[in-house]
Length: 161
Image (cartoon, rainbow, N blue to C red; front, side):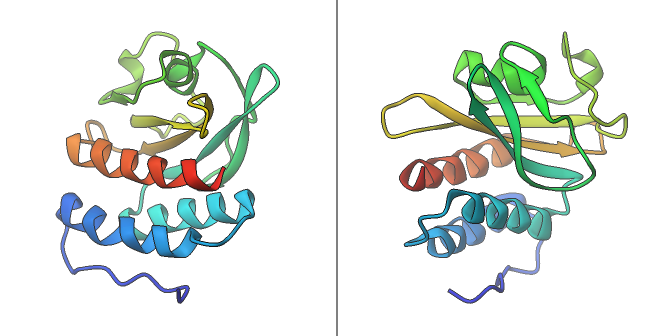
């Protein structure tokens, strides 16, 4: 696959994910290096949607540790059950937060972050291996379209973990 995304000229996120997901699948197909794949996924999300922050926190020992991302500097380590990332990891489910200030225990890695969606990424044994974290600098910026699209992308990563 070429290192260029071909996206429809629309602001409809469902249509953008519909175009993006197969391109990500092609981009990571056959590439065994996890860091390279995560970096390209984060870059593709940032390029497609202009999200404030898009990246991964990878399970290492008893914490989530910052992985490849696009955006401003971020928290390096997050404990399980802490913040939205830790909650998504521990609950094993996607969490959409319209207003991060209303999420109990939210970790403010950046005060500019206003809304967030975090998707667990499972390994082939069904364990949470990492989380995909996407932040916006706008309140209530994410919808079911984002949840669906990001969960599809997370499922693609299960194959390459």
